[in-house]
Image (cartoon, rainbow, N blue to C red; front, side):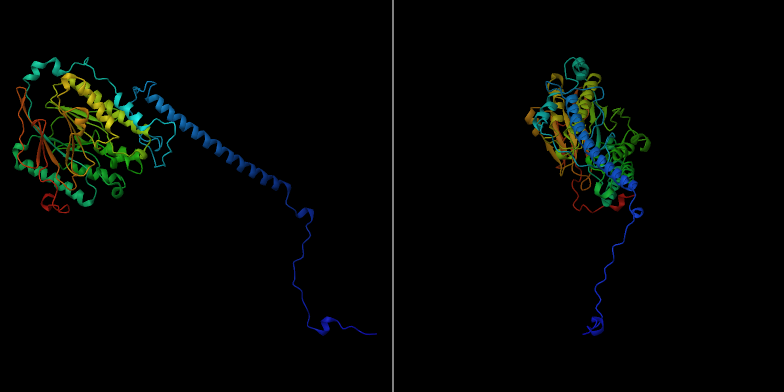
Length: 464
């Protein structure tokens, strides 16, 4: 018998790769049925949450569309006219910015529905529909008492105007220097003691530098209070609209530049009672009458169409229209008006045109007002400009648009109003090439030293 040797004895032992044996799972070691039920329940909850999200998304979309239609229905009648309710003068900002009065955090603007009216149609509606309607039923003071108007006397006076400052730390130092320089100017020129008030035409900060922190508002208010006279401030883009949180920024603007700004800060020995009136719902809007001139402050911003919904823009325009309309209709009945000055921030553009067209209706359509001089003073531009294009377009030849150079690089301008004796204006002359006279000498704008040769040069002697 042949004996076969075992491989393990003839060769090295061969070990096959070990694999883990499949363990035997007894029925008791399997996952319990209740755990599978939990898994199933969790899946149902997730699926239900997804369905709820889809339903809510569709609900929000349809609600927003309905609200937009309601806004249009509330503002525009079937005949294209604008409806004005008792609450029409409410603050209105973009619906993209939360639900509070001035909005909240910044969100992405919604796409424009295809069914919205064209921009031209909206502009036409705003241009041609305003409240109250200018009529001869509200007889003007001048018309009712023409004899008294013909022999009326008014004192001459002046005010200073600055805009778009301070944007940087050195412009803050410059503003302090400018206020000190005005104090010295009044001290050295007693004849200029008739300077009555000042106006800042908006943009009191640069958002990228200040981040709209409260300290920025507080600091600029403090610097303006260093001036020789009370200074009114109208809102500009960077005062609230361009800020990260618009509602909070507008609250700060009103806190530091609103109704309480003048009485609590200024030198009472120089304060001239302006009998200022402010809108109850929109206190940044103001109006007052002084020596035959009606002054109106409006909330006019330079905003691109894509930066907010047209509903918010139209309603803010409507707010300004109503404020000018009510101010003109009220004061022209009560006083002898020889001129009107409107303070705003935004320049006159295609988007702001409806405001100026509506204002023209209160002068062109009434015989006793057609020749009343009206001047719009604004900032948000580069350079000093006197524009009469709108006057020529509308044949409103008594209207002038004046843009003030940013005060960070130029002196605040002085605006002189001529006196009137026995109904005749004592026309102001142009004494140098830095002065501009308007309305046959009723108004003179003095740019003083004009643009600084060195924008960084700040006189240290005036920083005390």
